[in-house]
Length: 439
Ligand code: GDP
Image (cartoon, rainbow, N blue to C red; front, side):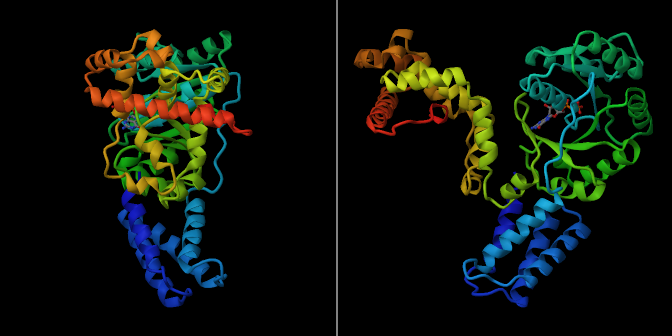
């Protein structure tokens, strides 16, 4: 995400490395670099100019404290300004109501339906009971897509295949939800390929009829400046409550994320990357600024781990580790937890300093496949009793998993080392560990 912008900003800060103090001259050249980096990331020139003017004023106003180098100081100023450009604090999301009504709008292909599914899944995890509503009456395929998504995440979908009136469908869905004690209704509306009067009128009519708690405008972040223009057109008409930026997993330069709040004065509330139903993130300007500056995003990483962390299972695991009974079945379970956290490369990029280092390396979710194949080729008895896996059994496991015997041996050795380490930690007086972070 935003790799090129990250590189360019780092280059700009390098200008100041080794400088003993901040001067008007070195500020000017650094600021110019930053401005170019922003414009190349598809940030509107006016916004970039205003941004760097503020950075310049702040840098000139700062006395360099001994402990901080000019480049560190500049990074801090830029970070604070990025946070403020993206809206400062995270914006609250209002899902209170009887039921709460969430209207989803945006162009066709922006990711509305995918986002609707992710939002429903996210709310369900927070113990709410959402319903999805298919209000795109023009594309039967869109209704079908939502139905399939709902089935996949275990959320009810309100469908009226014969009804061509989206306002009526929305009203019926809300009434129906109330009678079934569902507390959130998410309405997925029809989009067009480009801004279109009829589409706008339709969404505005739904808005007027159902009075939503939240109107979320969904936009594809890969479309850069176009995203910003579309955001403006929708806001003029719908006066929405928040923006959802999708496809941040792609080759996004950053322009949309950095310019939207400034342009429409509406907060980005969620970001979405990937098509897995559990990769929706609340948008935190602070964390995003840290990621843009290559400082990683440990907070999100830890939250993702916690979300997958099953308390019950963790306790069982800890007991097994204490009794030196950690086995291949436990190991497999741990791998599955990590996989559920999302795309492996995105996850690793949240570790400070790692994002840049791995940007050209192809890390796919297949990274665990080999290991899983080996574990899958073991019998339940072998998984529970790693010590019985002798030479013959290893040969069979190699064959079953399509690996060669050396790979199986290497894996067995690593696993043994891991168990040794657990044993040692158990002997230590304070030897407690966090089972959820294993792997
Ligand atoms: P809609 O027309 O606005 O409802 O858009 P869809 O939800 O159908 O999404 C359009 C296409 O973009 C589909 O192929 C989705 O799988 C894909 N898509 C949606 N969100 C994301 C995302 O966050 N990342 C990626 N890579 N693809 C996405």
